[in-house]
Length: 381
Image (tube, one colour):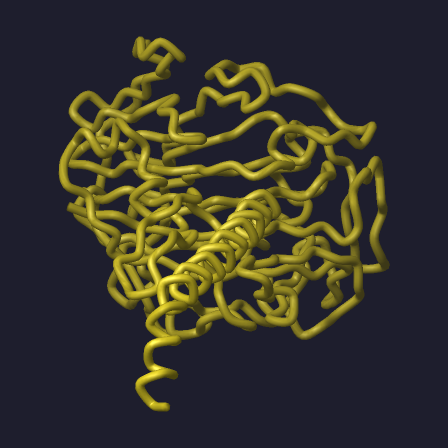
């Protein structure tokens, strides 16, 4: 009987194997389609960064799985062509809170009061969820943030800011030379002033501002939502500011056209996801938007150049030689969403605070306003 059952099994074994393989293949195909849809959704919705690709798996189950492209996929081609850059530091904001091993979270801070900004930075306004950092500016009356430059001890807006410098904590990260990039989305409204910038380490003994060289990778103004600003500040017998040639993300070209002015409230191109980067090499800074270089500062002749869409460089302005060799100094990172102050005022915002309250002026904004950040990354050779 055993031989009979064995004989019967041998007869049907090939059919059983074929059915099992077909069933397994169908399940893997279903998983691949589902995973691909999920991955595409995550990239589109901004909860993940990188490119979607499929790769063969050599394990026993076979089939394909969905993977996200590596961080190197976000390096602009012109940066890749200049050498073997490796990702040295990054934060993709996974988890449920800010990684305090990488960042100091400003709390009860009126940093920016020198620019007459209207916000108090609170730790509660810097949050992480779904792979996104959110810096939220909202209207609320708070005290304990120091003296308001317009008078009194109250602030009428709060917002969020992170830094790797020795400010509100010890230095967590600084670097010299490399390519730094942020992928972020700005809020709508004329009082908002989001920024990603490189500054001194904040440690004792470091040169003061502007001697250390402030590298503004990107500043955005809600009153001109299509324009990107990249600026260098340094000292040369006084403060020097290299006036930038704005990059218009709507027209995808460098020009001085500031784009749509609000009010009325509009959705400009800066209110969508974009990457903003700075390539820091020996005696040169090059600014990028969405992987495209649009201006650079040449330290050999202290001249800022604009770069056309066709790659043609044109001299914009020559400034004095720096008093301090800022090129050799390590720089840390700041991410912040400022509200009001000199920047937005220069670009048409008329709201302001005082010791007795807040005057809205021509305030036109989504409230609250949220600066969203997908990642911050630094590559070096």
